[in-house]
Figure 1: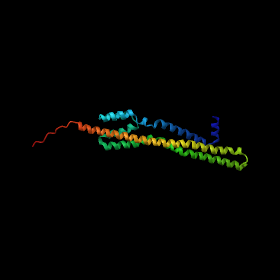
Figure 2: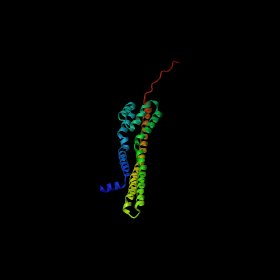
Figure 3: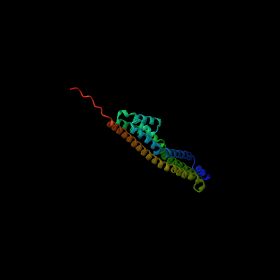
Figure 4: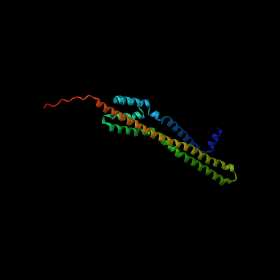
Length: 221
């Protein structure tokens, strides 16, 4: 522990924002690992319930179900059911538009993580420049004969550079992983939404075919 504190002190003031960046990056990473999962957003029991409503033609019940249990997927489906009376294409367009509106919820905080991945190396570079300025000031005052006097500036330059890279590299990796995961989840949401649309209107067509045909009275000759 004492070694870590000594290393932190040797990095100078730039280590303070670097520490804050590392805490923020870790918090965002943990939040995304917990919440950005397909099984958490697209629950199998929800899909089964909606399929059951659709196959029985209970659009109002499905709509009420989505309103009772709001979520990313249910919000998309709710928009489709609310436009059911306008026809298949309108339902499909409403769901796709709702899916696009849900993307910011999936990508929440990812912009911050990407910014941290870009900013922390620059902070490390700032610490490097600050450390080298100290080294040159020492050289200007006492020359290069005393290595102990130069060690502080050199240590600050190296520690901040390494710290910035240690934070930036995993942040960039996790940012790309989470972006890919969010895009994959959006694709799955759209796929399941369109599948429900297909089932809904297929059921409607089959119900119309099963309905008894009523003979119309013929006009008098």
